[in-house]
Amino acid sequence: MATSASVKQILGDLNKDSFVTLLGKLIGESKYVQNNPPELIPEEDRIVNHVLDTLLPYSTTTGGGPLIINHVTYKPNRGNLIVEYPGTLPGKSLSFVGMHMDVVTANPDDWEFDPFSLSIDGDKLRGRGTTDCLGHVALVSELMRRLGETKPQLKSTVVAVFIASEENSSIPGVGVDALVKDGLLDKLKQGPLFWIDTADKQPCIGTGGSIPWKLHVTGKLFHSGLPHKAINPLELAMEALKEIQSRFYRDFPAHPKEQVYEFATPSTMKPTQWFYPGGGINQIPGECTVSGDVRLTPFYNVSDAMKKLQEYVDDLNANIEKLDGRGPVSKYVLPDENLRGRVTISFDEASSGVACDLNSRGFHVLCKATKEEVGHVKPYSITGTLPLIRDLQDEGFDVQTSGYGLMATYHAKNEYCLLSDMCQGYRVFASIIAQLED
Image (tube, rainbow, N blue to C red; front, side):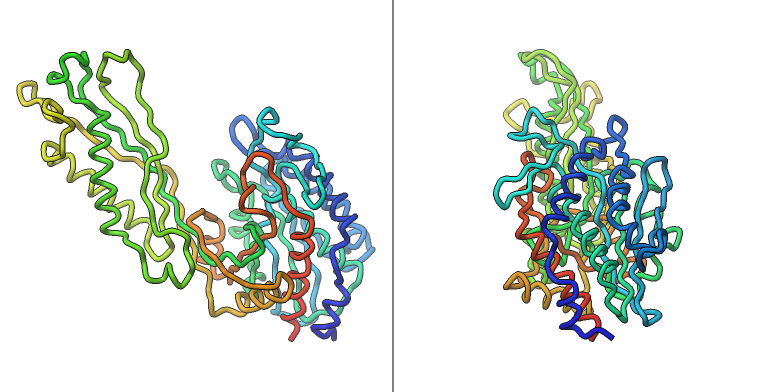
């Protein structure tokens, strides 16, 4: 049986030429895996095919090696790929999951280089998907190729799950949600699951929940020269939102565990968009809509927060005349006309955050590997949202997260990753596999 030291020696360092060649092929498909339905529906099988070209020569499918490959598709051209390197001990596994094969959109006119082809600038590997997440697809593919090529005798089964449909959930039943539902990932509960879709080479131990909301405000349209005959929905929206935010921060203050998890911010509730139906500058509109989101640390319940927001709005409507006005004739009730301003709140699909188990073997192994290969370990948490990993945790998986792209270029124009970071990521993976042999 391989020892921890021998496993690391056998797996060695990342084959840079092979990695960059494969990444170039994947970035060359990135135009066709942009995920923004209904206009852009990704064809993840374009990525699957390149990964298969890399791994099939070392698979049981061709007889060339030990890798067991399962291409699972729920929608045409939108496959997932499960790759397994069998270990010798039943019931002992570790997995790398979350390397998704879709990307966010990119407008070439806004970029300094072509987003849909790989370009190299020194240590920089540039193109849409290099950081999120085609770089990780190529990296874990290279890890599995090396396992299939060198055939170390491991106790643990090593599984890689390349998934479809991570960037947009409007079309359900395509990716990891369907794999879990069908029980195809059940065996991964037998060991730590490492979700490889974050950044900056450090363990990400906490993420936020997300509650997208819309505040629709109804007033009364009138000429701006006669504001006393109007109910100004813009003013009502501003005052109502101010009151809602004040109550939110009272009921969901900074939680003591946020310090333990090194969250960059506490829970927040804020506007991000404003809409009104148009009209002249001399016209007070009759309605407007303010939209935004709540980012909730995982120590609070998303359903509780939504219930509270609705309670705030109900109370405001019952006491609309008590809201502060904005000047001597600003008001939200016209008694002579039996009119009252009104606020309604609605929610789009909400998702919960996650707090990784800091006492699990997976967490300690990831931290040790990071310190060994990166030189330091500093776990962090953000209120960005990874809804799929909360679902996995709720299903009983020991989920830990990390990634080797750059947070500064995540979903950004001119996206890139660093080859040196990916090399360190490969060694972290090798260290994780080696440690779990002990």
